[in-house]
Structure formats: structure tokens, C-alpha cells
Length: 55
Image 1 (cartoon, rainbow, N blue to C red):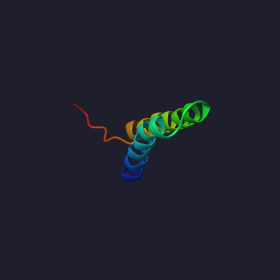
Image 2 (cartoon, rainbow, N blue to C red):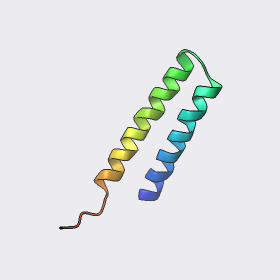
Image 3 (cartoon, rainbow, N blue to C red):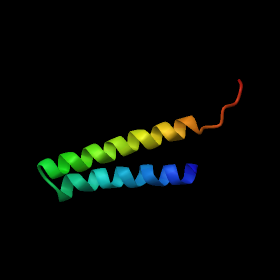
Image 4 (cartoon, rainbow, N blue to C red):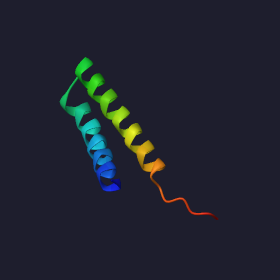
């Protein structure tokens, strides 16, 4: 599960960077917004699935 989340996070980051070069205007804004929300969702998923160890 964590591997998939890390993979999706990495892909979202790459697509977000590439979209700024490949698209312009509203297309770039929509793609950036979708990949940003995807990155936030996967980061939240990774945080919630972390190993919880008592200090």
C-alpha cells in the first residue's frame, strides 16, 4: 500500500512540474490543481499509514 502511495506522489510531482512547461492558461491551472490535490491526499495517506512507535 505504501509503495503505491509513494508512486502516486512521485508521479503527481513530476506531472505538476511538466505541466508548467507543456500547458498554459486554464489547462495548466486545472492540471496543477488536480496534481496538487493528489499530492496532498497521498501525503495524508502516507502520514496515516506510518509506523506508530511509543517514545
